[in-house]
Image (cartoon, rainbow, N blue to C red; front, top):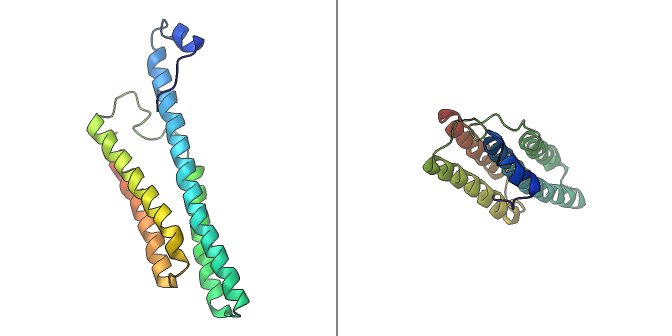
Length: 154
């Protein structure tokens, strides 16, 4: 994510080492925006489960409530884990540069995760508990695959 240069960036370009600092800062901001978007999408999935819980209460189907609540809590925990994870602990922020093909792979992981989350919002309403479990497992697997890829390239 490229930002326009302000006067401080122009002055900073004259200071040795500033550019690397500014690049790392820009990567931190991009990572924060991406994590917030992923967390927001997970919360969108959680809100669909909330609606499903309300419908089950309305239909007086109390047997499913505990299972649905556990899945809702799983999504909430996952969202908070992503949103509040410490920034700067990946190779994005190290002084060594990630290669462009590795960066593309990370972006591909991110894109696949966002697509999974966005497409599932419409489907959760009709999912069974087992299908919701499989969905949550696929979210966790996507995040773990991304994190493992980053750890390999530190």
